[in-house]
Length: 239
Image (tube, rainbow, N blue to C red; front, side, top):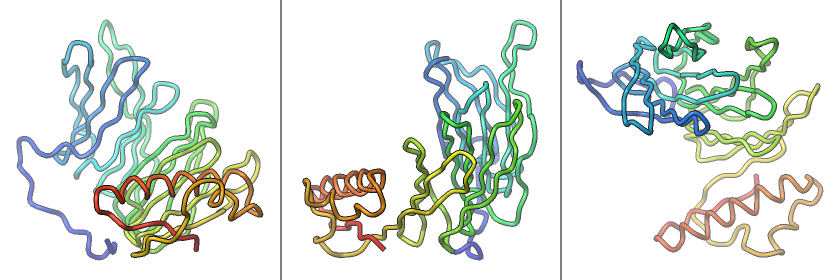
C-alpha cells in the first residue's frame, strides 16, 4: 500500500467493523478498536462493555495495552494517542494523557515492548516512530527507517522489534540500552521453496549476526514450513 493510495472508505455511521483488539490478561480487560472511531473497554468475565470512547477523528487501526495502566491507539486520522486507566469514584475510566504523534500519514500498527517500556508506531509511509517511558510520561526516541511502503504489523521478541510491510518484507532491529536501534536483518517473500530449510543447517547461516538473528531466522523458517501444508509456498530469504 503506497501512502498516496490510502483513501477513506465509506463507513456505517452507527456501527462498523472491529479493526483491532488488545487484551490486558492480568486485569481481565478487552480493548476493541473500530472503524467507527471508537475505543471500547470490556470486562471479559461479565461480557460487559463498561466504556466507549470516541478516541479519534477517523478509523482506529491499532490498539495496544501497555505498562503503568496505559493504552495506546493509532488511527487513520494520522495520530497516536496515549490513554491511562484511572479510578473515578467507583468507576474505572480512561483519560487521554497526550497525543504522542500527529503527522501526514496514517498509523496502521502499534506494538509495545513491556520489558523496557518502549512503544513503536508503524506508519503508512514506511517509518516506525518510537517512544520510551520516562517518569510516567512517554519521551520521543526517534524513527526507524528501512522501507518505503506501509508498515502493516509489528511484534517484539526480547530486545528485538520486527516489522512487516506492504513491500513484502520483514525488518529486524535490536534495541540496546543507551544505544540506537541497530537493524540486524531483513527478509522478503518470494516464490521459491529453497530458503531457510529446517533443522540445525538453517540455524547456522548467519553466525556473524549473532544468536538472536539465528533464532529469528529459525522461527520464520518454521512458519513458512507450516504454511506450505495449506498451499502457500512463499518463503523468506535473507536480504
